[in-house]
Image (cartoon, rainbow over all chains, first blue to last red; front, side, top):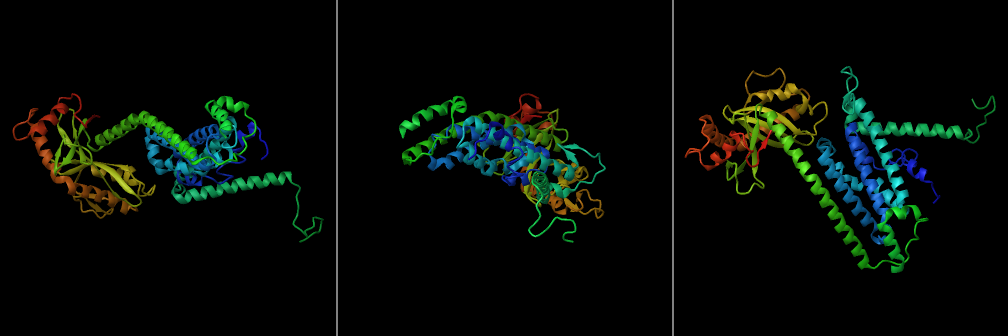
Length: 220
Length: 272
């Protein structure tokens, strides 16, 4: 694997290798709890906390965890942080905890978290793993914020619960229902792909398909 | 193998030192670990995880309980109008009592009192399936008149904008502030003006009907013991007697007195 700089470790998760928008991991909470920005952000913070805590512990203990039981050990570490996150959410924001329902405990099975432990934290130093976890966790939060904002603004006419349109707007209820999650994710990914395509186009010389000439008076 | 492990285990206790100094990741271990080591590692990790969870639990539990109590108190106040304090009573052997032998697993309702210590009604929680999930609600019941005097939906996953209006639409919710039982759901414009009619939300008939059914079912189940309990407390309170008469019995004297005196809330009760 190519050596990466600390800056890359931190930044790649936020945009270039965004866990949700590029790697398409952790889509379950992305679809399920982004009906309002509040829920999405609390979910993002909980996931960030679990990812950071697990990465620090896994990279710290990587050499004393036998490889035969590493997945069990990782899950144990992750589950501990998830349980703590669940209890803290319940204590601090009971209303949002109620709205998130089973999705806080389900962070245990979020691919982003186990994926980062296996792919990064178990092979790198604590410092690098911390940067990676902060980057990936922030990337997840960014994705949740985008999804939640689009859905809440269109579906409820508000942002963080603050009404935006002053009663002159008929909310598209479907955007905060499950189908709205799929629509939003589809359009966000479309926008990402479109932007990527343009960036690639800008750096690469234009190449026509085989057999097509670019001379004046070419194929009509 | 142990030679290789010991320094690493030392590193692990000092993550900060480890972080800056360590170069490339350690080479993958060739020798398979013994099963004793596997079991030991996971057992130790499990024990540590358990301890961490216990600590977190102890720190968050009081706050979670306080939140739940505050939420319940707010809900009881809301559905009982003028209630200032409330007291939990438990259904034991078919009769309500404030001091059961063991509260675990017993059905319970909340008796609300106004600032003068007069009972104003009984708040009870009830839950049954709605359109998508269980609808969990609390409603106030006035046994003196046999009326429902307030309703608040505590939890629902009904369709936003349609069924979820059972919780938010005041024109629906306010109908429960004074309505006779058993409730009857009528469609908009088809009511006959009866005092027990509830006009259902157009487009949310299933959710509206579920709310009405939940309240009716709950009352059918425990109306008799509630009314029986009510007749004991209403009788003593209205005469201004704090100490119980011979007919009212032990339960009444111990339960009403502290609430009526405005002193420390009785066991299971709370200050609103």
